[in-house]
Image (cartoon, rainbow, N blue to C red):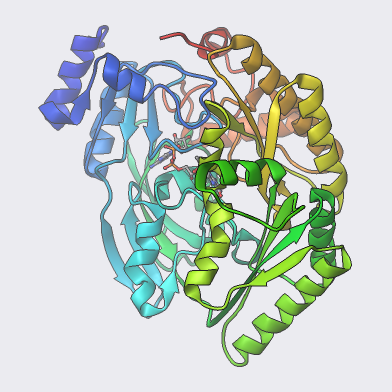
Length: 482
Ligand SMILES: Cc1cc2nc3c(=O)[nH]c(=O)nc-3n(C[C@H](O)[C@H](O)[C@H](O)COP(=O)(O)OP(=O)(O)OC[C@H]3O[C@@H](n4cnc5c(N)ncnc54)[C@H](O)[C@@H]3O)c2cc1C
């Protein structure tokens, strides 16, 4: 008999996992009703905290027997509603699955449970001169499982690539509860690349419980500079010219005047008089002559900045100084909390040469829709993050923020870019998918999904548009009042 009420459901799950591994009730529902994209919310019925692959598989099988939807969740820092329990049901949290299971230094591989926080991976291997290269700005809290599901990038993606380039093997609990191994420690590359399909599938193909990742040598030399400009246009032009010069810095990150104002308000940080944008440049190198190469690349970047009217160039003299220069980038989003109660960070990609005109458009859209915007983004990848600030208790402001975001996404596509660089489609951009993909493209994606997931139980109503039974629920997600 399927579980039809909260007590049935909690009782059934507690039999599998134990009393304290199943959370129900209003407080738990409220804590898990959204991720960091807070304009869409939906209550789960229960949250479970399994500790192993076998426990995850048992929960998924139980959900199948009882026709209950389930959604995997890591730290809930996702920015497109991916961890939202769209049709209610069970949230499978990986909070207790945080162990590093194996470190193989000679082969530069690490095996971890997917609830491990990104930074923990690097902390575990730094003493061997290695690191896990994908470094989302959320890396001190976001999990390996979330990074895999979203194919996360980060400031150093420009040089080192996104998550899919660093994951070689997965243990996946498929949507029916079978335990499947994809790839492996040394991934040989024969056959279909199922690891590549699961990475970036936003949790719609099952729950990843363990992963083998590559470890990358730490660079021998690192140069970091913060370049201040009079306008964000000068900063974006500099980025396009640095890339055109053939240099590939490890990071090229821009913060605009909105972010600088928030940083001043929150932390009292001061930047050069007249600065309306900062460009953080990091150049690194390994092997023979590393220092000269990193310095040479930095010289090229700074000269281009000065030719574009830079007001000031500050170069790190030691580790503490470097950390100080990164503060603006690392604390920028947190500082926005001083400006307004809610933010939505959009994520689109455009060709780098179009950055100056796209930023002009973002400011124009923000003015026309009457919502504030600040920008802090991975400029080297052409990956924009317009960050709209508003009050999500006011439905009118929510609608304006969503409309402004959609206008920006449409322009990204018109300019030859993409709907997402790293935050995924989730529920946020599902309806925009036809802007980028033809009907045939979408049909192929649905067929690929159906290899793993033929039903509506595993993370339903995400990524692919027009899924039956999601459309009417959608109206309820936005602005759910508690
Ligand atoms: C301040 C801030 C800065 C950020 N900076 C970046 C950045 O620089 N780059 C970037 O790419 N992103 C960034 N993000 C977005 C976010 O942190 C990433 O998408 C991150 O990978 C999400 O990890 P999480 O553990 O929080 O996942 P969650 O939000 O919990 O889940 C995200 C998705 O992953 C799925 N999922 C989670 N665990 C599993 C699993 N084990 N198996 C299958 N599916 C799973 C969920 O169902 C959901 O669809 C940022 C977010 C914030 C709030």
